Image (tube, rainbow, N blue to C red; front, top):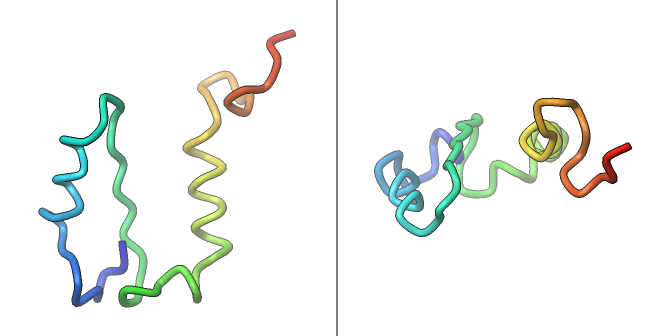
Amino acid sequence: MGAADPLTNGPDVQAWQHHTSSSLRVHVLPGGHFFTNRHAGEVADILRRVMTDPDGREVGAPVT
C-alpha cells in the first residue's frame, strides 16, 4: 500500500482479510497509488520473502 495513496486507507486494505482463509500481510511503502512504479525492487523483495517458507525453500519447490 502506498502511504500517500488517496484512493485507499489502512482499514480498506485490512478488509481484504475477509476474502481469504490465509493470513493478510500489509506492507506500507512511500508513495501514492502507483507506488510500485518507484519501488518495484522493494515490492519484489517483499514478495520473495513472503513466498518462502520457514525452512528457506520457495513455495512449490521440491522437498529433498
